[in-house]
Amino acid sequence: MKNVMLLTGAGQIGMAIARRMGHGMKIIIGDKNPQNANVISEIMNNAGFDTNPFEMDISSRGSILEIISEAQKYGEISMLVNAAGVSPSQAPIEAILKVDLYGTAVLLEEVGKVIAKGGVGVTISSQSGHRMPALSPEEDEQLALTPTEELLALDILQPKNIRDTLHAYQMAKRCNEKRVMSEAVKWGEREARINSISPGIIVTPLAIDEFNGPRGDFYKNMFAKCPAGRPGTADEVANVAELLMSEKGAFITGSDFLIDGGATASYFYGPLRPKD
Image 1 (cartoon, rainbow, N blue to C red):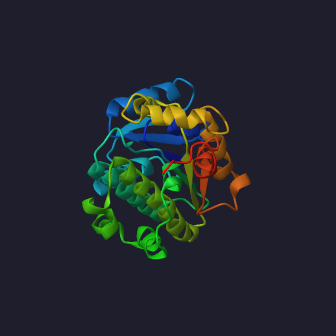
Image 2: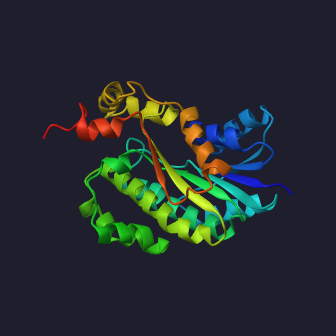
């Protein structure tokens, strides 16, 4: 039996983290698109890792339980890397809330019930969660503590209160950060840790969709005018994940790490500031 890493979302960021942290482990790679899971699995196996692809849908609790059960055939789950999600240009409001908000909350909850002692997880959030104006303390608490099956019924997540797909995405990512905080308390009872990483513009196929989508000029302007002056790479996100998932990060749990080349700083206090 091996220690097992559960990787959900077969993309560049998830693979970069899995390659950094998954040596010697069994890695189960879940994705709604089996071709994506197969491609990432083959790349990693050809580089000496031990991976199996698995078709799964993060918006379904049943599917999450299936991949957890599959992973447990090989040993205890000691690492979770959740990089699954859809972007504002890829999906309608309902799908963004079901996948990015509800699905992430359920995944953290269910893995938290079985994570090995000393285990660790990271979930990929987004700089978008940092752009939205502050919610009320009551709304933050609702996002953090509402039972998962009641989340999508919250008043703040009803269609009349969601302006567009970008707003839905921001709400989902704000919820991710709050769920990580509340789940960190529960994971701690198993001596395990969970954190989130909020990347800015990272060059991936998903980001390229955004560059070519309706907000493409907005994103290109964003990385041109951020302090770093460029988009990031998946390996730079993996650098942060390596800290969080290793012994060097043993005192870090329930936290969110913004890695965006300073774009959010520029959005509030620099040339990216909206001109109202």
